[in-house]
Length: 371
Image (cartoon, rainbow, N blue to C red; front, side):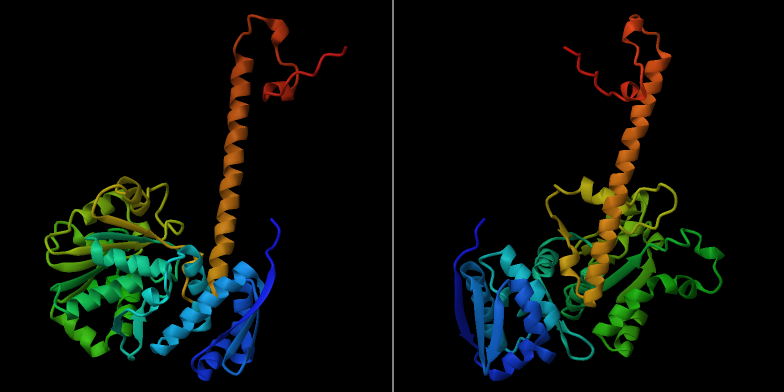
């Protein structure tokens, strides 16, 4: 397809300080935006100059105008957010960035707002508000568990629920926690520490400690959910890819009245022993069409950790795809060899049709007849 006509344009930002923040140290952010937007960028004062294909320039103008509107409202995106913002606008032509970045769930222990940082996270938060059971599936660093916990804390503080229950499979110990040294808390703490860390990020340690002591926040291994009915609470199952089929079934049937449940995990990171089926992978297949259940999927584009994490995720996904393709080729070769062996072992009523070469045994075609 031929490129469109080359055009130039400029957009004036309302505050010169916005451009300084936007450009970043050494104009590194602008250089990255050139790549994401597909246009040439320059700046002078509070004006951004654009050049390139007409369609790309029009899209870039839309991006900068919406960015400026956010800035007027006191919302500033950092360099890591720009790529996700561009991706979101490309995915939804009717979207305004305000819909993603303006809504604050709550302020964390340091007073910083917790909110969506991309389209996938915005859709995830929308699902958490409107569904009693939500699955969040995707690679590490996409905010699946963190946002779910923020929603749970907000619901507890607003008295929408009486309790928060956080759980994880203790996969390395299986169900045999009794063999580990120490009391129950000492046994399970290593497996549940990431959940405590997230709580401490959202509230002061003293407040978290008080809520735990009063039983309003409970952190426990998945095995301890058996036999319970979880009413009037916000329940989060983290690292669910390491639950077995039986554990997942047990957990999902614990949900009681006035409760919400979130299940998070990464189906590419299963640590179950042997050939055990991941309860998360199975559940998302079985429950995909049930009303009242939302399944939200994240990709490497949605990673909100260090930029290197996104590239690491892509590298491993490429490796996994190559391994899967190699396994499938191996299965096909084994099947062809098995079929060839069976053909050799079966008497042929027409000996003249017996295959004469390995290529014939593996299904190769006949040589063309000479004229």
